[in-house]
Amino acid sequence: MRGTQAFWAAFLLFVIVWTIRATVAYQLDLTLDSAVRPVYSNAMKLALWAAPAVVFTVLVRGDPALHALRVRLPIWRTLPAVTVLIVAYLAGVAWDVARKHGVTLAQLGEALAARGVGTFAGAVPSAFSEELMFRGLVLTELTERWGFWRGNLVSSALFVAMHWQYRLWSDGVGLGVVADAPALFAIALALGFVTWRTGSIWPAVVFHAANNTLSGVL
Image (cartoon, rainbow, N blue to C red; front, side):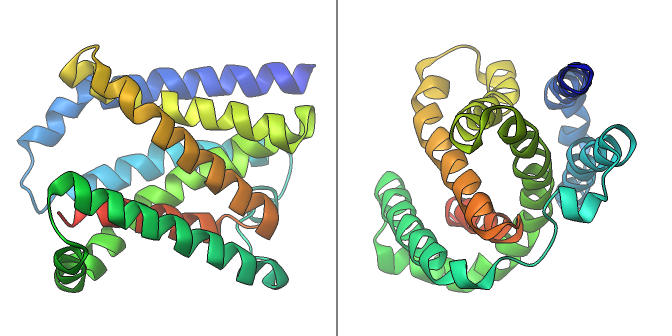
């Protein structure tokens, strides 16, 4: 019980801090040069998502961070099936992104060839921070208490909620936020499943960054 209370208290503190960062404190980002802003944003994500996951794991759980947070090589025999899942999912995302932006898949491919590597590299730190917190720490904590499937459902719902603060602050309450939730929830479920099957957050980090890259190049 004590461990459960510590986890939820730490998670609530994380929610409060990130809400401040994603709303009123985000005004600082808007004053930064466009070249500096992504670096600052990734640094803040590492400080506010990744670092707390490590601190909680080491100081509260008393576990080695690399092992407990699944920052290890994946189980190799699981990779072929997981790779097929990831490629199939990203193909669907590519089709949906092209459709929403009114471009062909060939044009999306040209954009990826021109800007994909840089966009992917910029997306990795943020993806790593989010995966370390949610698939490394939160999913592990909830799976230990409730089993994987229920833990994945709840951690995925929490993951979706953590992406609402900025949207609600900047756009207000509207159908756009709600409409995006099912797709983000499906992505979170897939990321949790990939982590569970491989025993590592790294396939999920690559999956996460690639998904963000497809949307970011257009």
